[in-house]
Structures are given as C-alpha cells and as structure tokens.
Length: 253
Image (cartoon, rainbow, N blue to C red; front, side, top):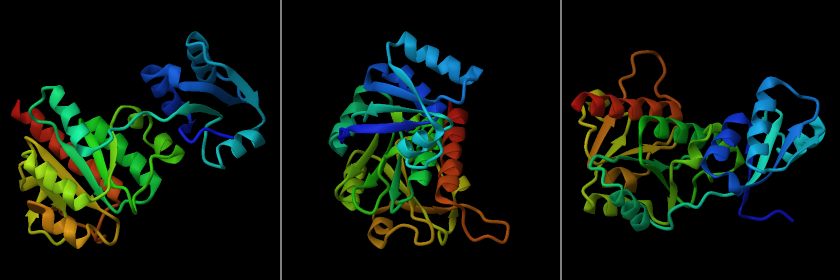
C-alpha cells in the first residue's frame, strides 16, 4: 500500500527540482527501459550521486504508474513537501525572511490541477511568496499539478485554508492590499500599484470570484481585452498579473 504522504513526480523538470531541493525525500526513481538518451542518463547520474535507487520498467508499466499522465519516460516516488499548517504560520515564516515587499497569489475556485501547476510556475518565477486557496472546491497539489509546475511546487508554499474570506481579512489585518481580478472592474491592472504588500486574487474560469470573496477585496481591477475573446485562461491571466507586479517592483528599485 502506498504511503498517503507520497507523491508521484512526473517528468524531468519536477524530478530534477526535487533532487536539488530535497533528494532525501525521494524513495526511488522509475524510468522507461526503452529510453536511454543523454537527458535521461544525466538525470540518472544525479540520482546515483544522491544514493537513490533507479529501476527500469516497460512503457506499459510506466503509463500505469503515472495513471496515464504524461511522464516523459521517468517518474519518482517521493514524500510530499511540508506546507504551512496555517495562514499565521505562513505569515510568520515570511516575516522571518525580513522582506518588506512580499506578495501573494490567492485563488478562489480554481479546481483544475493543470491550471494550479501553471499558476505555481508563473507565481514562483515572478517572485511571489506563496499561493493560497480554499480547502474546498480547489485543486489539490497532486502529481499532475507538481508536474505542470515544473519544480515550482517544491519551492513555493501552497496553503489551503478553511475559510478564504476570513483568510483575506487576516491578510488585510497584516497590512496586505487585496486586489481582485474581475472583468467588470473599471480600473486596468496596468493603472494599479502592485508594489508593496499585496495579494492578487483570481477566481475560477467562467464564474470568477465568489461574491463574498469579491466583497472582501480592497480593489478590483481588470485585464484590458482588445480582441474578440472575453477572458483568458486563469493560469494565463495569473502569469500576466504576476509579471506586471514583477515589472513594477523592478522599476521601483
């Protein structure tokens, strides 16, 4: 029986990131015995140097272990990385880093693990400190999300809270400006100050943020849409928001 604290890391990016961050958390690596190329050999060498056992399997068994998700011919069984127990713990961890302008991404109703993985990847690349989401009706940090995040899930905290509205209030009490992305908002993202302590809130595709979440935001902004489509995929919208925040912060220095 598999350990409930284990996760199956799929593909080169996710496994390489874990080998760099916490090789001791990997129990074994499984690779497609029909694939022996330079890229695979290099990763297997890293695993060998870390003292991690690697075994070959048939393509059919690889597909079964990966539950028919894309695995690129390699996967790893590893323990889940510990996440903050509460929003208070997360904020205390962030405070201990002594950075004055840390910012967060908050998700409301994003249930697709592919979108979660892409959001983690963009948020980590742009310098966000964490991603927060409700525990209910929210994508779990599973094998798929970890693969799509390309290693970001091993570095960026993902905290699922019991009550998102209450979590937003706690952020505001900690001097975070909570900015929600909404298509009907009058102000453009690009006319909004995204420096300092902010939390960017994005809702589910189609439905957007829930009413209570929207009401808790300090400010609502929109992405300008010039073409025929009415909205962007939530992970794409998140990438746009994150990199606008990064651009403003770099220009402020």
